[in-house]
Amino acid sequence: MDNNINDFSGDFPVLDQQVNDERLVYLDNAATAQRPRQVIKALTDFYEQDNANVHRGVHTLAERATKDYEDARQKVQVFINAPAAHDVIFTKGCTDSLNLIAATYGEQNIKPGDEIVISIMEHHSNLIPWQQLAKKKQAVLKYIELTADGELDLADAKHKITDKTKIVAVTHASNVMGTVTPLKELVAIAHQHGAVIVGDGAQAVPHMPVNVQDLDVDFYAFSGHKMMSPMGIGVLYGKADLLRAMPPYQYGGEMINDVHRDQSTWADIPFKFEAGTQNIAGAVGLGAAVDYLSHVGMKNIQRKEQSLVNYVLPQLIAIPDVQVYGPQLPQKHTGVISFNIKGLHPHDVATALDMDGVAVRAGHHCAQPLMEELGVTATARASFYFYNTKEDADQLIKAINETKEFFNIGTI
Ligand SMILES: Cc1ncc(COP(=O)(O)O)c(C=O)c1O
Image (cartoon, rainbow, N blue to C red; front, side):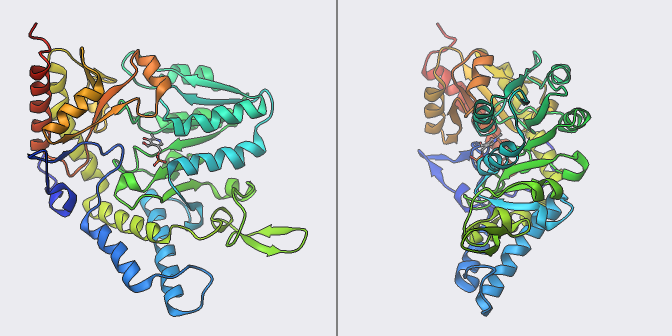
């Protein structure tokens, strides 16, 4: 194990408990991460000291709340290296960000016969908005397939992305197999054909350094809650010229310039896309989460998660009757590992692991086309974050072996 990074679990009060008389091992981080005290305190401080609506008041609390909110935007800007703070739109989450692009850019630019290209490993949030847009506009939805190892097939991407392609939308990291996609290469291919490209960063931004300018991605979406912020806040990054040319997503207060009886004009970005009272406390919490992650260091986080995967994945693969989906090489994995135990439904596996204090997720992980591709209806999924430890990995492996014993798997 790599000991370059301290054990941060002490910062997370929720981790300090027993579940079913066992030490809680939280391995459901791909669904949502836990919050450190620093984020919880930022929320409490905001509500106890600064709470007010933003932008529209001149009183002291309104000015403080506005500063807190806009400071959070700047923190996110720096964190993903966006060129300007106005390129960062606050949304409800990754799903909301992706729907926003489909409903505005997609609605405005997709015509009958155009092609939209996504990958077969997309989360439903980066699949259904494009599927529905394609149906509505009589466009064609194409899927980039996987290699035998569960990676995005770049050769197939080169084949699928053509001059007819108008939008490419691809996850940066799979929420099922832990695969990291070659997003930068995909950006280059999309741009060669004049298409815009959307990155789904829900499983990437919390776990690795992300630099949107280096990626040269046109849009990039992610959720706060998977990177330790409160729920209900997320981000859409977009290139300013694209964002400015897009119609608004929703109409109402805050997003206007001038309103008259028969016509209205819109505010500049980012406000054009932030209609109504926003999740101000959520943004403040996201800013605190960004501070925390930056303090730990995204490279350190990536290294720590890699060392956990290096430790646990070969052990998991070596257990008879356990099948791991996606890349078998630890270095090709984020901390997300999907597996099944032969003869057991993943829901039974997850329930049994919970009896040993180990929280994993079971189901289709909002990726049913990928499940079909893998030939399963569901998997169990253990997903690690930097505050997990070697002991957590040991408890997972022990619990899987005990589950097998309990159900007499491999002993008949
Ligand atoms: C890859 C990916 N994209 C999008 C989403 C949607 O995120 P949210 O439910 O926070 O909007 C998720 C959530 O699990 C995800 O893993």
